Image (tube, rainbow, N blue to C red; front, side):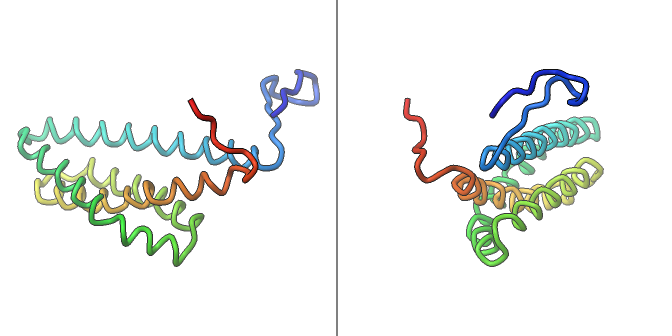
Length: 149
């Protein structure tokens, strides 16, 4: 990566030009960060809405348990899906499905619908967990081993 000094042609004085493999890594890191921030925000909204719509702690526990079970059950199908359709399509599918499910979950007012959407959301998030390591492996060079602490 190299820093471009501010000038009239650059437009933005804090433009960072990336070349080659780093460009793809920076784009992926930006997309992943936005996805994670969106998940945290929508999940927080979902919990606050659940809390204000007469739900009790046991219902929130059931929703969390359903999401965990969905994540456990969804790992093998997510791996098969990623193998069949490729990492890029799988990640794009996950990045569109998860926010839609979280928005639906924020709008749902019945307990059964919350639990069902929690389960399906866990299934969808398992695809994210399955696809991230191979995607990051593709973005690193073979000659650069990871930094060891």
